[in-house]
View 1: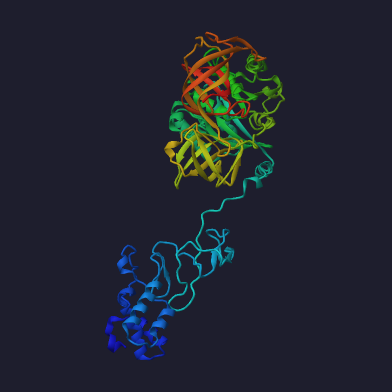
View 2 (view 1 turned 180 degrees about the vertical axis):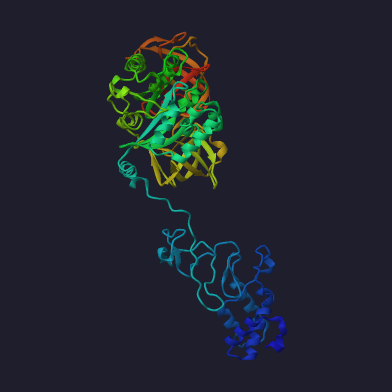
Amino acid sequence: MRAVLGDAMPESVLTQAALQCAFDPQRALDAVLSVESAGLPPLDARTNNDAPLPQRANKETAVVPRANQEASAAPRPEKAKDREAGQCQLDSEVLPKVARMTVSGKKQTMGFDVPSTEENGVVPSPSVHRGGSPDDMTMKTSPETPSKRPETPSKGFGGAEEPPSVPTPGRTPGKAKQQLNVRAELEKRQGGKSLLNLVVIGHVDAGKSTLMGHLLYLLGNVNKRTMHKYEQESKKAGKASFAYAWVLDETGEERNRGVTMDVGMTKFETASKVVTLMDAPGHKDFIPNMITGAAQADVAVLVVDASRGEFEAGFEAGGQTREHGLLVRSLGVTQLAVAVNKMDQVNWQQERFKEIISKLGHFLKQAGFKDSDVFYVPTSGLSGENLTTKSSALALTSWYSGPCLLEQIDYFKPPQRSIEKPFRLCVSDVFKDQGSGFCVTGKIEAGYIQTGDRVLAMPPNETCTVKGISLHDDPLDWAAAGDHVSLTVTGMDIIKINVGCVFCDIKEPIRACSRFRARVLLFNIEVPITQGFPVVLHYQTISEPATIRKLVSVLHKSSGEVLKKKPKCLGKGMNAMVEIQTQRPVALELYKDFKELGRFMLRYVGSTIAAGVVTEIKE
């Protein structure tokens, strides 16, 4: 055969032909030559490892299955009719372009999946999923079910049957939502501890960051090496007393200026609570950031400076103690702990403590806090007295026997979570992740979310898929109302999402509108409010320019009865129904349906002028 054919044919083809024809050289030569006479390229062209290019249709390469080779290898008269019939038969047996046989008999896929065949009788089961072991793959034969894929012979050149290929469907979703008992899972996850979102508020320089930084250090959340580093760095910067504040004030600008600018967030645990701590800025310039933190809180710690003159500066007109107290109450916080800080600077005097309590108590009652929900704790943020353990300072223990600050935080009652309501999450930050998609952070206000869920983002009205959930950098399969989470989402462009967007349940979406009616309570305003009055609407994590489009009526403060319709203007202390128009659509809920998503604040020229609740969504 080699003498007749020369080097044109590869050794493997000649050997196979010889074996098939029982070592009869004439029959073997006929079998090999019949392949060439079928109009196919010479076999040596197919011995290259390079796969033929799919786009070159006129140069299709295929090797004849063994059954046809045996048929063509049988002795037959050399007639044109026979040759034409054999060629037609071969053409009908040429494999589809997507999957071809190579000379070695293995399927070559050209970058496509090799389809499974009807003749194999194999239909992939929906339970087969990516990454499973062969044992996990369940197959079922279903001859009645027609295959929509092109048919390919299942036998290679050597006659061995190829294992049927199984298309791999995408990721299978996790547990169905109804299978998750959220309340039970929450108790299990936190070891029986309830979740509490705590915001720390107060006038600038009252010592909020130092107080909470020292608390975290004493609890072991900050190690000694890190604390030592902060002490050395703050000494070099000439701000030795700010070392504990640097635990929460992490940016260079905050450290240089010595003031908190953004809401710092971390977590710690008490005996019965897992506390998410938000350190809000006290400076007047950063009130919008403080509102963002307070809107996500369940309870608050109001820090006041006990030093002579400092408490008065923060409490009198122009100070932030009053405004912060009013803001947190308007945003739904009902429980308040007042940390009377820097008590060591007044030698733990009981008279000073009582003086501060009497002034603050009267104001907080006017703001809407019940006396039974306000607690006062004398502390020192710098020395750490009465923070995590009861103080042993004789000057304090002689007249104070109440709890330390940590115990007081532990005594707070956790609020009722709206777990049964449809999913709602207000976006507080958006950033690009390392992988595909991007991340959004925020507090889940209602409902719960699981990985793999599809959610709707409003106002852009776009859907996306939640690929990952993390809580304080720990990955989770699910999260529920009250959790401050980071969601990794795919299927949507990052430029469509802004801070203030709301992620919600697709079946029960939140409504986006630019006009709504609300009941507002006006604070101490200098300029009467008239129709067309410009304001800034602060709602959850968003601040949006708006105008008071219509003054509907003046209401009675307690009963809500209409006292006057269509008033010309509104003065301080009034309770009124107004219509507000925003520049861009805002996702809102009615206060009666979702208390968390129905509250807002109005500000004008750097001061808070009103708090309100949404009563009717117009458009």
